[in-house]
Image (cartoon, rainbow, N blue to C red):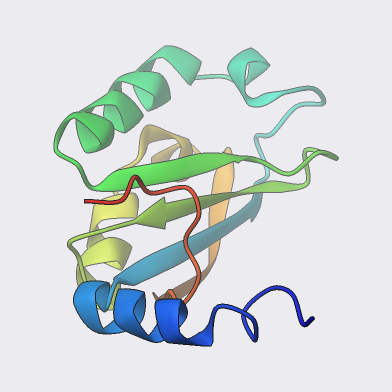
Length: 119
């Protein structure tokens, strides 16, 4: 018997029609002021953490974190488009201070989402 999306095709189609979730992926690379080590050891961490806490509190940022090799970071945003996401992350203290450099902002059509609680 097939597994994964093929086995659950009917279920998958119902979920997609019901949710139709579009998220925005934002990818950063380490900037010129990044020092070796994890993000919480970078200059301006407290201001960055406060900025992120605000995004989470508003329901805008739903996932985020550094790559395992600390070469950059990825965040997932909801309830914003690509242009608004660019404007938003431009105000992140890590971007302003050169810890992060914005690499890419892309709208993402989510077809499979096992992290979001079912309603």
